[in-house]
Image (tube, rainbow, N blue to C red; front, side, top):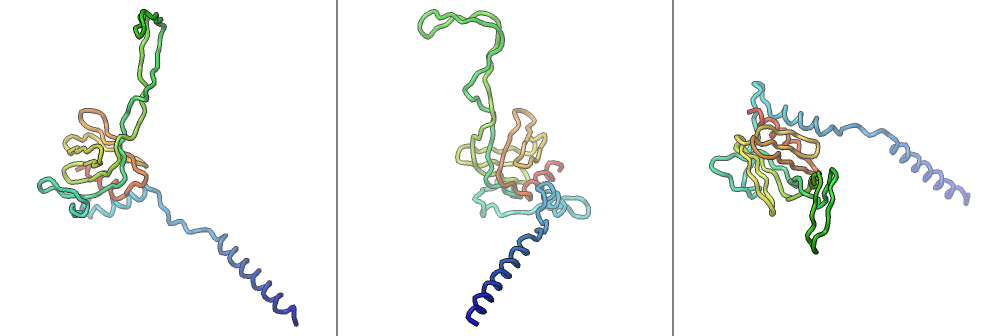
Length: 193
């Protein structure tokens, strides 16, 4: 009789461990949908039966934004990084050329060749993107930029950011770690208006 209780405790603990192992091996339900599907879902929620967009209207005061005129704030993408091509400080040379030192710090170079700087995408500012009915705005401590819809020729929604092509000048590239599907859907819908 002395060994009955310890044996029952061991059997009961083995049973509990077995039950937890069985529950742990169950396949999780797939509720995660891809970012592209989330954007498409948000777009379908913003479209009514006439295929016209009914975009949300946010209070600019909640986000510390002062709207210009009767501008309507539609969406906000936090933690956006503005990327630009910048020189890495390295140079590539091509062709045959010779360099002869003349005096200290002065060299005479002759021959044919070209020198190009190496450039790479670098983060120049971290802030947020604001989407209004009149413009796409990037706000940060380092740089602020306002691109009106008249200046935009194309918008590309990427998995980790957005590329905004202007009618003149270089494209603007914004990256984010956690893209907001509602912002991407509203941006995509507004480019067709």
